[in-house]
Length: 158
Image (cartoon, rainbow, N blue to C red; front, side, top):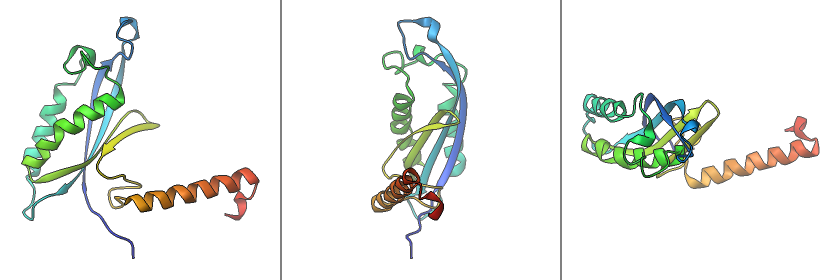
């Protein structure tokens, strides 16, 4: 029997501009940033969802429609996806804690094909499969075996 994990997922999107080459202002460009935030209840009582949603909206509203390079801490740190994810993750942890929840993982993307993740536990699949490290390793081994078969032309047998 597989171990089951449950979590809540918040989705936030905001539009902002950033420049990964601050010395060349012509490289400023815009994205719709998508943030996925996985949390679990930390207390037996139900967490305070309404307060959490309002706090998240307030937090991300400060980034809506601005040039990230002009706002702290991104006026000193280049606002890469990784740096932004790191700042958001550590800023949001106490907000969730205050509302009876624990932030497990933050996913952040600026395009449909790539996402940066930061958190305490790797995740595969969806909110119901918060994977343990052993599960992640087993999954990676299966993918590697499938890839090897494809390279050898045996992929039809898989």
